[in-house]
Length: 184
Image (cartoon, rainbow, N blue to C red; front, side, top):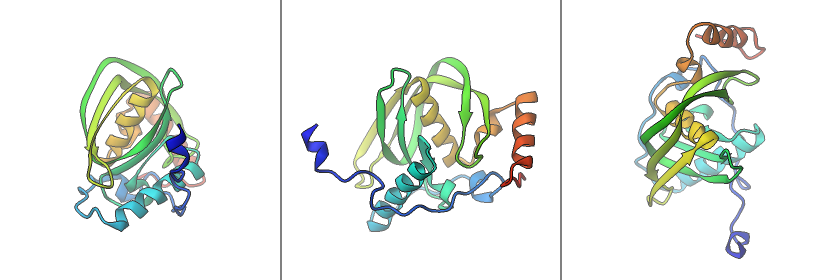
């Protein structure tokens, strides 16, 4: 733990950016792979942490702040209340298996709206850090849900796209009626 004290808190030097909301085209298109691993990528990740914390979220994809790149950050507990903190650049969901659970899911791009969304109970994501170092992240429960949710964002999928029937209709109606609503 002592080594952790010497590291800056993620997002502490970042700027809070405006959130893209449901209906914004950037949320509905696949993101581009990161090719420039320079200072602008490190700044983006810092800004993403700052924005996620300001919005009280557990994960944030770059396109949620209008940047169509394959990057996400997370600070998310699993079902055993173990904290998972990190970021992934150019992530790929390599495993999603186990039982499928329908659990409450929300999104910072749909503030105030939550719906029971089916997700696998186990997920593995591979990618790299801002320095280009390979990373493999494995999660279960709520953290697995977070990993799948953020990977979906980078593919242009919002969680409401995974809903069907009445759940989907209710969520989209709530989005249209929300003060920020402009579903497309």
